Image 1 (cartoon, rainbow, N blue to C red):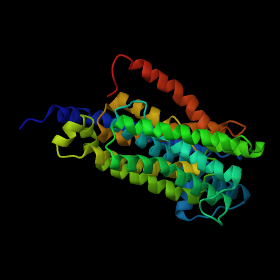
Image 2 (spheres, rainbow, N blue to C red):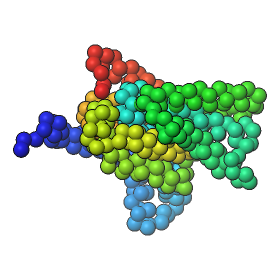
Image 3 (cartoon, helix red, strand yellow):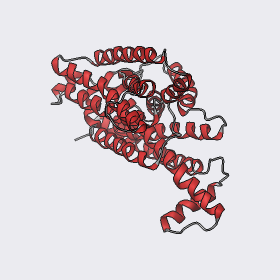
Image 4 (tube, rainbow, N blue to C red):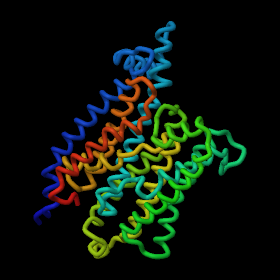
Length: 355
């Protein structure tokens, strides 16, 4: 029996997809090694690579210079580089799935109010010292507040969908409504806050990787792997949902169940990200569009390739941040890079729909 047209198209484009994947992986690897060498203490790429190899072999650094290189590469730069890749992957995959589920090219993880809710939780901790977990330190309280409040929009959407079936657009509108509520609440809290606390809230709100340590990598890794594994396994179902709810039901799939599972996972993954980096925008919006230009709308290759695109976008932004004086937040650079890219793709695709 002859293969269907979509199948033929998939196998026809597979060599191209593999080539793009290998190219992105190579660029990501080189950029990751380069990022390990960027610090106020001068380190070359070769020295950074040697430090990694020596640590794997168990060879201890000898002398002050070698010890400083080992500390900068392993303890300072490595967790930040790994976190950049994990954060970029989580945000890009979440954006890809959201845009497909909602049939909305402007959808991204923060559209459903996750970032605004997390920022409100962090502002409660910073401005008023309020913690949802009493008796813990400020760092733990900040993460706990941002994570718990970030899950609120997901719980509201899931609960509302369980009581009454919501269309994809209604889910987005519900999320946007909560986003404005939390944004207004955050502004109210900041009104009578000291300048020092306002600066901390601002930096957390635009997103930064400066505070990442090795212990922060583990939860970021768990959230990232969970999203990649589950959404890759669900890619066929997500593809079916692109054809519409009726087609999806005729093929034996439950569209509402797919959306609820997806929204819950996206909220969980992004909530973990904002706990440790704050709100880094534009990655979940731009990376999927960039990837679709090369592989189309099939989520099977689109999800992993979007992950690579998102990782590169965050890593490039962080490299720029570390190369410039003044401690510019990573979220500012992603916005500067992402907004013109998005406008370019929007203009290029103006005569045809992305979906």
